[in-house]
Length: 171
Image (cartoon, rainbow, N blue to C red; front, side, top):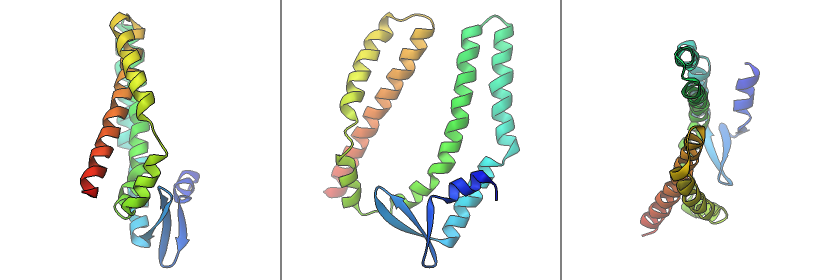
């Protein structure tokens, strides 16, 4: 086992015939088979040479080609996009344990966790400001403000989705 696998397994604490995983401040019991399946999936993503070779080839070759054709800023943005996609791939694999444990957490624990994290006011202000700045921006600032606008809009939509889901479960 390498250091990255050990880092991944630190999330699971050994318990009676399985492991404990903390989700939203609530301990969730996972069987040894479930943790082994999560570890196999993590290895399948982390150690897959075709996946990382593909991301690396696209993240270097395509921006390099654009740069040689005289499009420096789009090349930089594309390289940045593929770098982010590599991180999203890792975050997906890392978050699989959260998805597995999400259904086992009592709804009261989820609601109490949510009440302490009001993210929507800041996201609303950010969406309005970046939307206004986006209308006046040019060049690289257009793309920066567009990314900030999309991110803040996604936070708002996620908050609305969770609010609607919590209302429909409580009803």
